[in-house]
Length: 122
Image 1 (cartoon, rainbow, N blue to C red):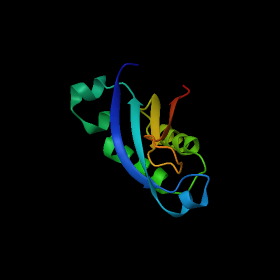
Image 2: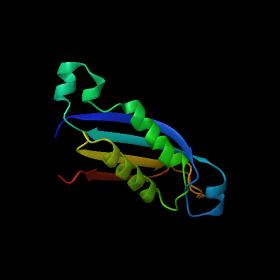
Image 3: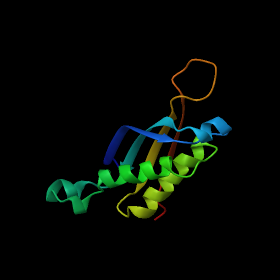
Image 4: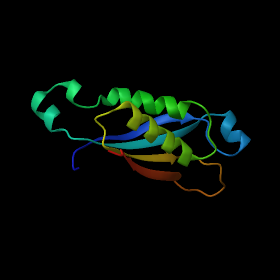
């Protein structure tokens, strides 16, 4: 499937991490999402009902990241893909890149990230 909707650079605060400090004070996360689906019908109809409303997807991502604390960003990314595949029936697959831009380490670097790809079992 070559068609996809790309959501890039979504900034959301969350309280995820293994340390107590990470779970007390919200920290910034950045998300990129690739939503794989057939966009042929939407391209011809110009009808939002023939595609996935990315505003709704953004709201779902924000709920997961802003929701219950998780130890691992791997779990947060998995929770996002699970919800999106369950909620949006037009979705064939999703790739989530989740960046923790201020991890609590002494070294200076741009952050830690995970990228996961999950597809619908048809």
